[in-house]
Image (cartoon, rainbow, N blue to C red; front, top):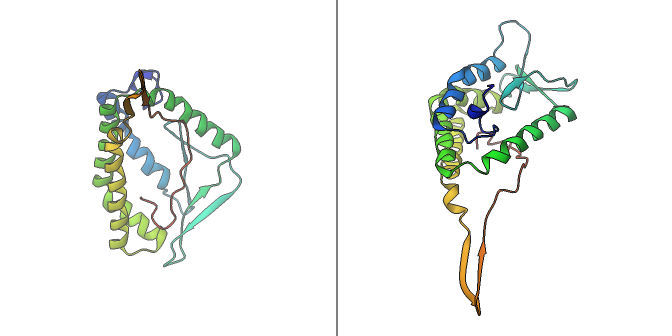
Length: 196
């Protein structure tokens, strides 16, 4: 996307609900699917998502994703290079600068859109998890349900981040706390519940 007003959420303006819908409507799901699909007998190589764009990794090291039930290699994922990690962190930091100023209602709409997309594609996601993990389909669907619970919690997190105020703690002294985002962090997905 080239217009910073529709950049999600790393532009210089707050993303509107229309910008969120536009971002998803621009074929992001199709791009994600294309990054996993392949039409030849070669093994699919998963791309990196950096700054909202699917990018071919320059890594020389790749990890096979093996179906434990059949030993079939489903795809390969890259061990991202240091420069790719730096680019991802820089993009996340740029997004953070505006995301921290984005109103709670807009954040909630984005998370609700994510929730709707997960529900819409839950059967396909469950099939992929089942193949990657060797889980039964029912267990994979349960994993997705737990992931949806995490998204639901994220929708309400704004109300959990309210500061505190104490009036007249000493003569003529009031105290208050403000909770603010500290910046970019790394999240490690649990291997046994990756959709969580």
